[in-house]
Image (cartoon, helix red, strand yellow):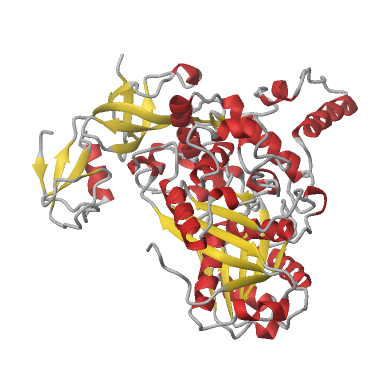
Length: 421
Length: 141
C-alpha cells in the first residue's frame, strides 16, 4: 500500500461535539443532534444541510448499549438527511476514525463533494459489569475472553510486559492521568472538569461536610495509592488509569479540497489517512507496542511527506494510561521505553515540547467509544484554528496528528492534518 | 507433540472439545509447517488450507498478565470480583506460540511477586455439570 495517494484532496470545514459525560435523559440520537448543531456553527461561511451528499457514522455497539440497531439512517434522519446514503461504521473503539476514513475515500473517489462524518455512543444505560461484557465483544471472544480478560486487563498485561522490559513502575503511569486531568479541567466538553488535586480536595471537603472520617492523604500520590480512593481495576491499572464510561457524540463536515474555501477561512487539509489491522494480542511477537499503530503512523508520515518532528500536537488513544505511553512511542514521538519518561518530565504536557491529548484525552474528556476518533479531530481543529480557549497551546499549530485504536490494536487509524488559511 | 490428526474441523468448538479431553491442541499447516494457536483453518503465512491437529506439550512461560478486579459477568457468576480477583495472562509455549489463559498457582494479592518469564504448565479448569473447560496454566514450583 506504500506510495498510494488520494485521487483528490479532502478538507475538514466544520467540527463539533456534544458535551461528554453521563446523561440519563439523552440517547445517542439526542447527543448526535447536539454535535451536529455545534458542527454547523463552526462552518465559517455557513452551509446548507441539503449540500450533504453522504453520511458515515462511527458507532461501536448501539445494539448492546441501547438495544438499537441500524443507527446511521436514524441519526441522519434526526438532522434531516434522508434520502442520502448513510452507513454505520464499526471498528470497536476506532469506529470514529474509520468513519472519517470512509468519508475521505468517498470524496477522494469523486463520488461526493460534501460528506458528514459522525460518531456517537450511549454507554451509561448499563451497569458496569454489562459495559465490561459489551466492550469485551471487541476482543476474540472464544479465545481471549474465555481466559477472563477484560479490556483494562489486556492493557494491564501490556503494562506488565512493558514494566518488565523497560523498568517502568505503576507509579509512572499516574503522570499520564495527572496530566490528562489537568488538560480536561480546561475543556468545557470534558466529562471530568477537574484536576486530580482538586478531586482529592473535593473528597476531603465532602467528608468534612458529611461528618465522616476525613481521609489523611498527605499528597495526590498518597491519594492515588489509596485502594479506597483509587481502587484496582486490573493490576497494575487502577481506576484513575482507565478512561470512563461515557455518553457523547461528535461530527465533522468533509469537503473536496478545491471547494474548501467556499465553506471555511481556515480549513484543515487531510495530508494522510491510514489504517491497519493486526492479530489478537496473544499472537503478537511484542506486547509492549502496537505494531498496527507503528505501521499506520509510518505510512501516514510517508503519505503526508512529513516526520514526527514536524507534528506540533497529537491526540492519541489513551483508553488507559499505558496506552498513551505506548502510543507516544508508536507514533515516533519517543523511542521505545522513553514514553513514560517523557510523561514524567512534562514533555507531553500542554506547555511541553510535544503536547499529547490537550483535550484531556479519553481519560479525562471521556470515551464514548464510537465518538472518540471523531472528537480527537475536533480537538486538533480547535487547537489549529486557535479556538481552544484556556487550553490553547502556545504558538502556531500548522500540523497535527490523531491516533485512534480499536480493541488492543487490532485496528489503528492515523490522520495527519494541515491548516491552510 | 504427541498427536497428529486432522479428523476434526479447525474451529473454536473443536478446540474446546479437545480442552474437555484435557488437551491443548494447535493447528499445523501441512504445506509450510506454521503452527496456529488458536487453531486456524487457513494458514496466515502461506494461505494453505491443509491442516493437522497437534497436541502441545502444555509447557511455557508467562509473557504478560493482570489481576482482574472488575470482572466479566461469567467470572462474577463463578464467584470472582472485587473481593476475589483472578489472574488472566498470556503464555508463550515451548513450541513458540502464545495464547490467552487463566493463570493459577501464584497469589493474585501479591502481583509484585509475579514475574514475566515464570515457567508454567497446563492445568485445565473444568466447571459445572455440563463440564465446561477453560484453559489455565499454573506456575511450576
